[in-house]
Image (cartoon, rainbow, N blue to C red):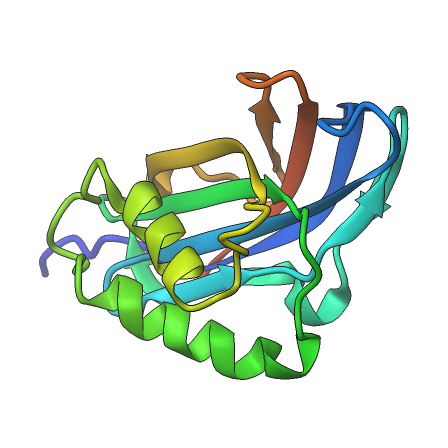
Length: 188
């Protein structure tokens, strides 16, 4: 009988964001994340959170309805999970009544550039930002400020149940940490 590789179900959720220093020097930032998550055997999952008002020294949770960013089933230890996310400070208000349909459109857009078998294109975050501007999510008059990106592929073997992943954003005057929770359950 051949050895079978263990199979895992992976859920990744956004927990909270900590602001060490805002991008806006005169008040709070309106922090949000846009991008996608990918794992073998699943549809590309668009990620777009509603803006969170946050100021220096504050930690704010992500809304529970937007926290789950990956729900992949049947992954092997040799498979990988891909993060392609960007953080922004909103500078122009958005019509949140269109939020759900916009997330669907964003998912269809990023799907055309990647598949589970291919690496994430280096310019996916730039292409996503261009799409957000073209479709009016980011204003052309007062564009939202790009705070930083996370473009990373992580082997399932390196994900551990109950662990936390930290995305540090420090390449702009703003300084943030986004915390993710990893749930990795072995199927029996």
